[in-house]
Image (cartoon, rainbow, N blue to C red):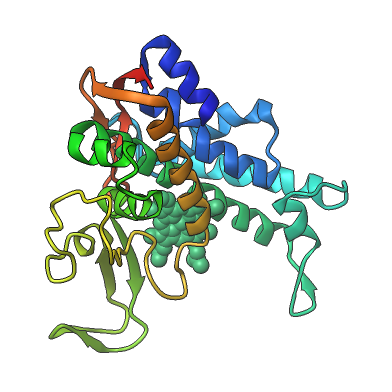
Amino acid sequence: MVFLLSEAIDKGGCDFAADGAAGIPLGAICDLLGVPESDRAHVLGLTSSTLGSHDADGTAADAWIAKSEILLYFANLARDRRDSGHADVIALLAGSRVNGFPLDDDEIMLNCYSLFLGGDETARLSMIGAALALAHHPDQWRALKRGETGIDTAVEEILRWTTPTLHSGRTATTDTEIAGHPIRTGDIVTVWNASANFDERVFDAPERLRLDRTPNKHCTFAYGPHFCLGAYLARAEIEAVLEGLRDRVADMEQTGPSRPVYSNFLNGLCALPLALKPA
Ligand code: HEM
């Protein structure tokens, strides 16, 4: 992050989405999975076409092709890691046993796929949203810079404010009722995390960005058995971005129009031109 920010500051600014945030979560997840440097640009292109497209031209078929290519990529990598003495997460999955049985190639491939899709674009959108939020809330930016706001609470408020995953769906396994609405077995129920994070019954003035907000029981990482596996990694990544901006940038300003990702599942920007003044 320090390197990316230094480069951007030297140039006087950057597209924070493409030149700043794009490489950070992808780099972290690729390091964890041991994806070679030479494959990373290709894999980044695939993930962008899978969940949230950068433009409206991408078709559903493009997304399915990209998903299949990612699966194929990890199937090959998993096969390679079975006995090659690597020390990454794929090698760990390849060598582990569940109830005494080793994971088969499909299980390894699907675990990698979840980690990859779960961990790249979501965290990226939060970081880009963090830069946008700070550029547009000078009081909060100053409080962060002066140390009046701690990084820990700032990370949580950025997660609430940006909510990169708009919703999650589940299929009801039994007849039930939610807030007076009958739900039948087989119905699909959708939780709108983005709405829950701005619930005025839970958050005081939810429409205000307050980097020192406590408590902050946001639903950005969902809740329950499928609570985000990468929540702590995502928090560490956002923390690094906030610290980098706080310590290295004196001022930042949006210099052109931002562009939202084209998705009804992910929320955030794929372009954010920013001028950055060195601290
Ligand atoms: C700001 C960043 C992130 C956001 C907003 C986010 C959001 C979420 C949400 C909402 C879920 C629950 C989905 C559901 O209930 O259907 C989830 C699950 C998951 N996330 Fe994340 N995530 C982030 C970062 C990461 C990272 C960095 C990784 C990987 C290292 C990751 C890997 C996963 C995995 C594997 C699951 C599935 C867990 C399970 O089903 O038990 N996520 N994430």
